[in-house]
Length: 499
Image (tube, rainbow, N blue to C red; front, side, top):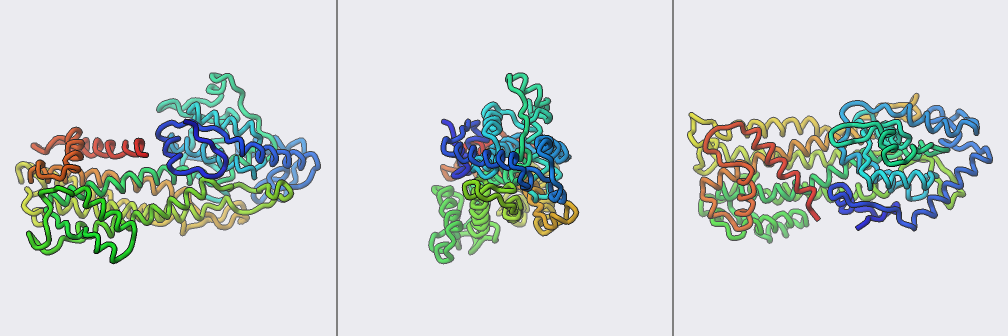
């Protein structure tokens, strides 16, 4: 089933299918007319010799430099080459794929003056998995993601590199293999390709899809921890959460009850103790707050995924060409910084539950550090150390990138968002948080095994079996880093199969 792109209406669910299930795309007929109309405007401007930013002027501080008609095509080529200054490790290939899709969708709105031929080539790249190699570092997040998107544009003109498995190959060779010629950029097309927020938004899309999956997973893992610790189920009584009124909090409490239904390990208040520690008792409140952030971030991403973010824009049926600032990434910068805090906290509370599982003073009679021979064997002692280290690292990464700004282009661009830095750091936090939650899963599975896994709720019995299929019981000390990575991979794979 093809997904039609038309510059509006693209959803995160559709992006999940494009990115993780290799769904193919097509350009909706409704977008073609607007694309062609705006292109005619650009061509008329060149013929008339009118001075319009980005078409026959320089860029940034050079905007007051006029360009001869004979040089307007060379201007675009120089722009892409000079702005391809990205450095460092490349974005994951899935982020590169997202970037192509999102830049195409933005250009289909018909405000950018780019030829349909270029958009057809971007569509071809997605459908034939021709994914640019795009360095992660070098974007200020305004004027858009210039450096990353320039590396995307390089592929179109046959001067960049694309992914071939784990290797990188020259795009010129790829076009030859497909019997296609590189695109020759014409007036405004280089600027249209690189002036936007698609690097931060593409990374943001991947961040959100992984975060949503991890937020759901953290609930069943927390539920299993509750069973290992004889947790008090009364804390999830619907009336408590209705009394506060947050839908997300009520949703977490409802799902926790569903996971724990039929459990012979959870308790009622007063049976073993009156109340649990906050990391157990406040799961709906803490996890629910993360769901609130995810809802906010989803809203901002879906707006930005369908936004025209380049400059200038051709509006009012071509009657007006106006320079503005839609390339400024502040909305996504804030969203990514908010996501960083929310996902760091999901890991933070998970680590506190890990501590309760391994600490002999807190774990309700489980072996110290879940060790098969306490003293002779350390068991899960250092798993908690690793979780603490990751949580601490997250706290440094969670510092908001959006509070920083360094002027550029001779102070013409005197405030920038740093949104791409925020998006990249959010991704690192999500990876760290998944490993923390993987460690909680390993410890919880071991804890309930000591209690008697036959006493688990039916829903969690199934999850226990899935984890045990990849991580054996701790009967003797071993290299636990392998267990963490295998569990992390198990959790990460679920992002690709939802919906």
